[in-house]
Image (cartoon, rainbow, N blue to C red):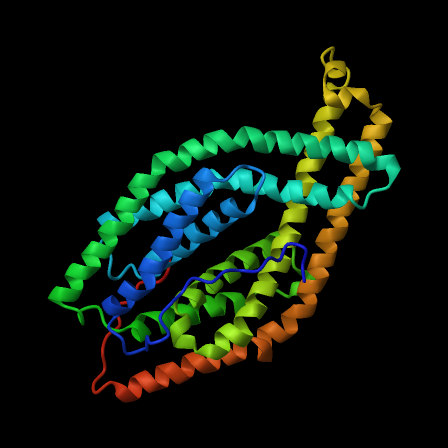
Length: 354
């Protein structure tokens, strides 16, 4: 398992949903647990201290799940309700981003401190204290931003559910069925992952784009999981999560390495300034700093390379019989069953995911 991998708590969904379920009925089962999980994650983050990284991580995951659900079910939700909610979710997600990035770096340095030899220990500890201080400074502004957006976000979620209740009372069949929306969307998102570049020769940017495409597929599959059957949750979902974890570890290592290189360049420029000796890094000779930072950069590079190798090993099975083909087969099965049930052709009004 990747060092980045953590157990995921899944959002509860109804297993009774079928492809023939009216879309509005399905939405009223799929959205409330996600909105409730978001409320809980915001409340937990407001009361948790900065020492525990998990509340912020859970909050970012909850915002992604809600945004994915609202976007993929946009056929039901008027633009004047949908767009403000998506905007607030995006702002909330971004508000937690810097703190989450620092949490990942802090976890990296905590592991490294337990492994590093005596020569580089002091420099690693210096970098760890620097990241920890930055994280402490981020905590209060982030909490203020969460508190400011909390009420507006909850009203947006409540307004969407109220609209769906009205729609169900007036015309529950107007927007078609869950299968008519879910199957084309899942097929399209799966194609984007399937058409990935040759992974052995992929550039870091191509791997990052593949990670984004995989993330969209993952959250869409989670939303429509009741249609995919127990095999998806038991056999397919863990493969998608494992792939995402390795791509995430590779991306984190690359970004952290670039940030460390920029810090080294900045310190090298400023080491002759009069204020240098009054700062913690001024206690070290440039040789000590340079060698210690080179060791950390090498560790980032090694972890990124190891994650990429694990990803390359996972990809052949994932892109064929392990994930793609069983999912394609399930989508075809649901599509064929829907055509057999339908007495006459219907025109799908599904918008592509944004």
